[in-house]
Length: 252
Length: 194
Image 1 (cartoon, one colour):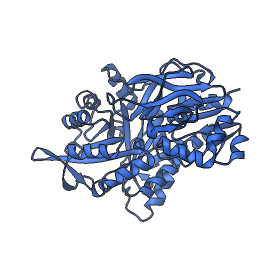
Image 2 (spheres, each protein chain N blue to C red; image 1 turned 180 degrees about the vertical axis):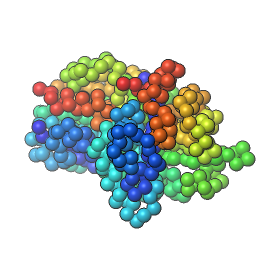
Image 3 (cartoon, rainbow over the protein chains, first blue to last red; image 1 turned 135 degrees about the vertical axis):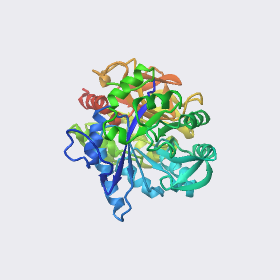
Image 4 (cartoon, rainbow over the protein chains, first blue to last red; image 1 turned 90 degrees about the vertical axis):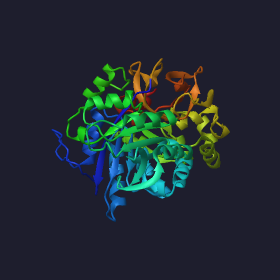
């Protein structure tokens, strides 16, 4: 049976992890490769690296990081952040990334999704969508949720599916950072209206929130950062809880 | 042990090389006929679209070379699918090593299948010491139905072939290079085949 996935997300700036991490036995908490290995050994199903650097050297440091991760980590990983062209994606895949995620660049140039899926296949194209509710309507936002657009979340999600996205990474800006649970209603609607996988993001605070994301939100995967980095939730324990609730997970 | 990974311009194939290197094997990415013919093991990877991948194989003559290789050959994901008779994807004609036609998942399930699924009904030395129900990482929209070459199955939409074997040719739908410790064990079994 296909299992639900648990995905830690690592924010990367200039080749280093940004958010503080609280891992016993990790000599250098800023080393993304060491952290990625640790997650892979402790039950993570996949990893996401989100590059938030803005320097001119970002391309080089990011490709070096991707090579390092691919050499050392034996689970799949996605790279996102500032990816805006077919060439960017070609380079990252050739360095060993399994998937890329595009966000603002896809809103600005939706045809990019068609180009990427035609050239590399839908399976490596994740479209990240940040949205929040304005007057009861879910609106897509850009630049980490700062800039609102007129796009409706559900319309945009359907469009990216038709254009060839293989997965959607939906972050609710209303829930992100609240530690109050995922946006389960919107998730469930996305999951019902789309025929591609939906990854839930934003709002994880405790293990029960993941149960809800899968049961109420019907998500295919759930992503979180700080609850894992600060060891507030251990992935193995989380998966044991999910399993006890009848949710299929990979447990070894 | 020299391993040649067939490079025909298809997606992420570095990961296969890195996985073999983690196991201490020497691996090269190549489309050179001599380097492929003389290798101890050949890996035929592939991510992308079937008909354009077959075009690339025909352009380089690899479509004639691969079915005649004598050493153990392992097709991974699209590589495995191209070793079948045909694929519904782009109506591609395959290498006809495995006697089965690749078809698309129905819309009753989310397509592509992405994630960790169990492998069952295991047989043969490629899957030696792998437990029934072990999880492997899969990403695919098309699948090979069950057939006489099936050595493992998975279930998504239907029960299908997740690993195939005929003579010296092996194919896996999952990505052993991305399937943690047990995926690595399968690659190791492949290197140890006699």
